[in-house]
Length: 142
Image (cartoon, rainbow, N blue to C red; front, side):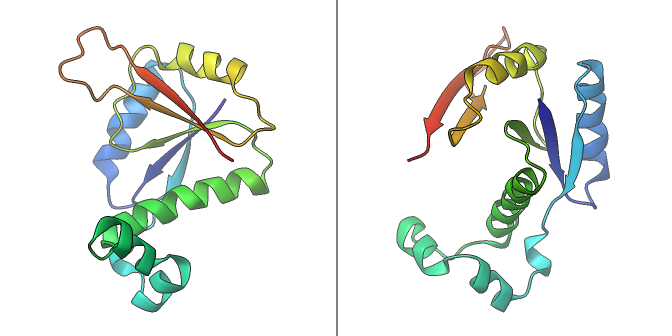
């Protein structure tokens, strides 16, 4: 499975940390340069996103970091489409890949239908998870 790591060019230490961990797990990846929201002109942000929708849903204006994160992920998806990559894993550079990641990627490749738009959220954001277990939630797109 193709693995992408989203990383701001200025965050060298973060890239070094995730690179070390993925290398230890024998997981290859491609770095995708993140969009730095603070440097994007307001007119471009408004042309590429729905600030009104965001305000209505969230109750506050879209922050630079939120814009940059959304556009960074969108750039990965555009790359996947352009290169005909049917299934991938997208990590941000502050992710902490667990030892189960390679097995999980193998499992996902077997259960995800590449012809059906799907997102699988892999999370271990529970309080103190000593076993390194994970939650897997698949969301089928309409």
